[in-house]
Amino acid sequence: MVEMTDWHNKIMNKSILIPVSVVVGLIGAATVISKPWVTIQHAEPIMVKGYAEREVKADQGSLTVRISERGTGNGEAYEKVGISLETVRKLILNTLGEEAELVELSSSLSETKKLNEKGNRTNEVDYVTATRSLRVNSSQVKEFEAMSRQLYDLNGEGMRLTLSGPEFFVSKLDEVKIDLMKRATKNGRERAEIMAKSSGEKLGALVSARQGVIQITKPNSTRTSSYGIYDTETIEKVVKLVVTLEFKIGK
Image (tube, rainbow, N blue to C red; front, side):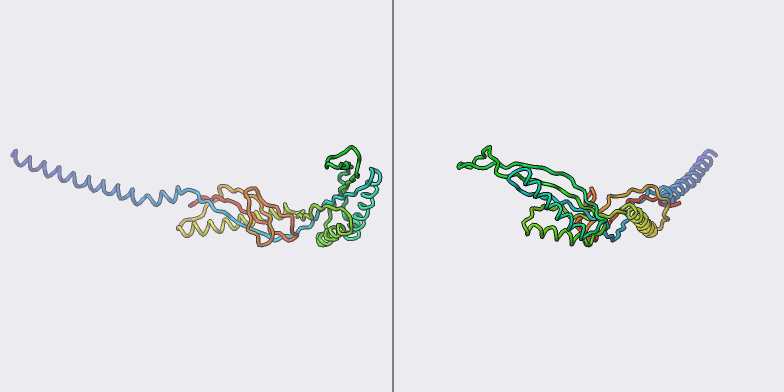
């Protein structure tokens, strides 16, 4: 009887061990199977960049003219620079029309002393230089280019002119920025949808959006800057914008 009891106990112990090992295996399998489901539900957001660009034309021009004339004294120098300034003013108005904005910025007088035999400056005045500056603003950008060339030609006629510009600007830039933000965001969402679909997942809600700096360049330019670019040399321009978008993945 003792031997039968020992044999019976051994059999019972084995029968208990087998189901336990099966249960452990099933739990492990269930854990492995559930991993993809957990990954989808708790996937990290994806980050994409959206891009948009738009060709624009400048509608404002600006130019600064610096006029200098010499005379034997203050009165003569200032009279000469006044005559030259009036010549410049007439040329500008004849080209751009009365709508052109002319703003006188500054005027100055400076004396240049004579040199002695040793090349040193003396206390005797050699000549006086009078300088006057004028800023020109106009929406006639095409005529603006022609006008600036005519001003350069005055130097060949004996007038002493220094030009800064012309520079060309887009007055309604904010409207362009808003349009580019919409288009860049749409472009970024389309890219994110392609990425999610290729992974067999569903694109979720937008988590965050960041606008990059505006790049305003010449046509066909590849220049970029982390601070942004604003080309003022050309009438034809391209405005570029990049946005960074972050989307949830899954439900």
